[in-house]
Length: 216
Image (cartoon, rainbow, N blue to C red; front, top):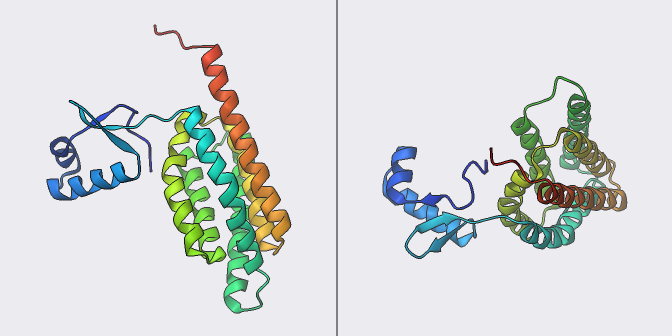
């Protein structure tokens, strides 16, 4: 999810079918799904518009995220204690992810910074690895729906390089703890990461309110 459409953007079947080069039927189905997910809403006289994202919404999303994501991470770390061959492969996968996050952390500190979308793709790879390792389809279903909305918070965080460097280090610690089969440590690392991410988001929004941009 790229969040390339600004909140309030009006979406119509005709315009989107022309933009995407597809018929109106799949566009109608996609818009219905977006509306069901709460990403677009119907406004009288305007059709469907992209819903807004605010700090209030962010707080509500993080309430759920803090309850669910550390649990999924814990279950993933539990799975690494299995002696089966698939657990060995999974441990190697998380070790590789930890190394790549450490590399990204260093890159964000250096002048040669990675592309933001490449970094977010790496976080999605960790999400998928956790989803597969935790082996709980109900947890995964909740997280999948939650991530649709969480991706939109990136617009509020403004891709701050210092925060992304810190975030990469936090993700590395989560991945390493999972690979080590340390559920307590993995859960704690996940919870710390989420708390710091929410703290950064709140500070960013406060700064924007205290120092509004000059309209000129």
